[in-house]
Amino acid sequence: LLSAGKRVLAHEASALMKLQEGLDTAFTAALKTLYKTEGHIVLVGVGKSGHIARKIASTLSSIGCVAIYIHPNEASHGDLGMITPHDTIMALSKSGETSELGDLLAHAQALDLPLIALTSEPDSTLAKAARHALILPDIAEACSATQAPTTSTTMMLALGDAIAVTLSNWKGFTRDQFKRFHPGGQLGAHLLTVADIMRSIDETPLTQIGTPTAKALEIMSAKALGCIGILDTHNRLCGIITDGDLRRVIAQDRTLKSIEEAMTPQPLTISGDTKAYTALKVMTEKRITQLFVVDTGQNVLGIAHMHDFLRAGIY
Image (cartoon, rainbow, N blue to C red; front, side, top):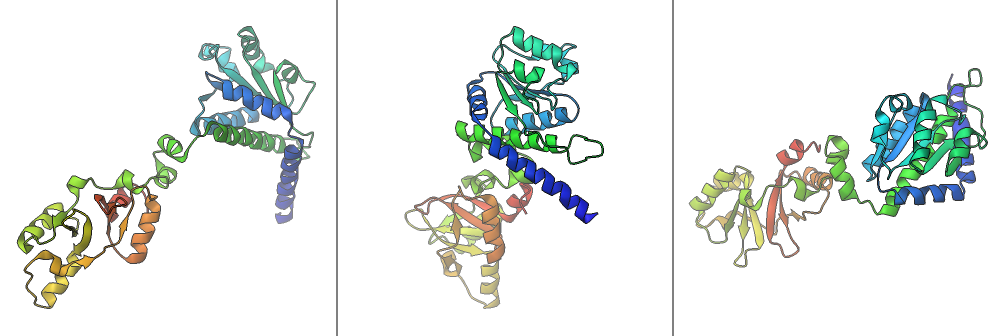
């Protein structure tokens, strides 16, 4: 069983290598058409090819392209109205003779829309109708007994990824743009920066150097973050006092004339553009529960507390 599984993977890996080796100018021509598309990139396909088409549309949408999937049968019953004169059609069919594509392709031809075909048959109806035909290598399916779509759909999916990633890079799609399209889940969480989750300056416990102890403790209690930042005469962060620092003062039976007598100078800080998961790693390693967020001049911009990371789904 293990050997059989490895043979399938080896077969499909070999198919992908042949696909890569055979990639030609039709690929670049198709990309240029997609780059210039002002409307939707419309993915179509039936059966297993339809599932792959839907996934390619989803990938394109997530990296900055306006892409949709339309089922050819639904297109014949009204969904053709979703297609605009500014769209490009990308049709997937191993044989290139999928009858259900007929109405949709006729509609595309009537609107003179660019058609990109992903197919294994260069002489098929679909390939001949296409402005750009991306031909898959003639490789048998992994299941020799049934010839069920396996290797062919793997190649379609990989070719779709190659189109999407190359197009995204060409358009200059950034991580910040990607983050806006993925606000939920661990993926979105791992793209957040400290600035995305930190408390505002108004929520940050701060006081000036020389502040009487009672007043500083009042501020510290009101903000309820277990610390207070100490600012120098230029309003730059110069120290921090935590609940732990105060407990040590009490244990030593000391009396504080001013709050900075208990502070830790030059506290650990972080910049707002640091990835949130990186900041959390630092906090975990240093065994601290908060970090002041500062600019390059040590001016405080806010504070990030351990609870803020948990709320954002970063752990």
